[in-house]
Length: 216
Image 1 (tube, one colour):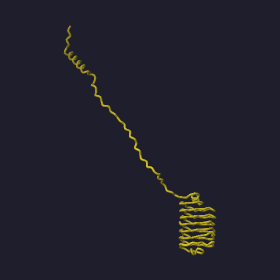
Image 2 (cartoon, helix red, strand yellow):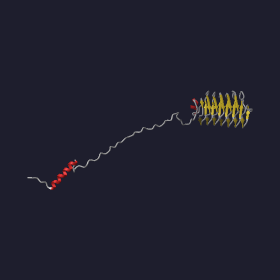
Image 3 (tube, rainbow, N blue to C red):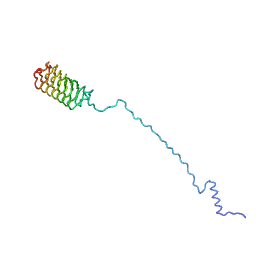
Image 4 (cartoon, rainbow, N blue to C red):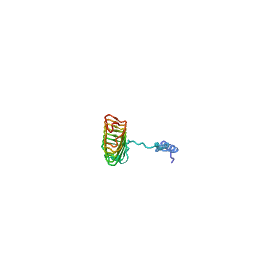
């Protein structure tokens, strides 16, 4: 029996042959073109160095005093037994028996009492009160300002020079050499029973110069 393909069968065979020749099938999609690779590069930057300024550090602050030794330490408690610079206290100060107190540019808002055998050396200090020597060994006041009196009783030597006083200078019964020179005194200079008598000159006195100090 001889096989004779129909028209439909011939068409099917022709389609299969065509697909085989192209190497594809009706069930698979065509291959996609390869995509270019994406390259990511991370760049790490070195930190920028901040220049450091060399030199001595700046210190802020303000200095409140230049006192040294026990005088500066005790001044706030009302005693002076050493050297004191630009300190300030608002109370009376005592120079104890036999001690020496040195004031340089100090501010005392009160009285200064120089006791038996004690020595006061004051340079350019401001004392808002009296300076009282009672049986003192020596009192030296140079420059500065005394807003009260300087009272020297039954003590030793004294030197008052180039000082402004709002009160009096009083020297009574002292046995050491005393010199009062170039002072500006808003009150009086009164001197009595001193041996030897005080000496000095050039004092500008708004009140009176009395007794042993009449010519000073």
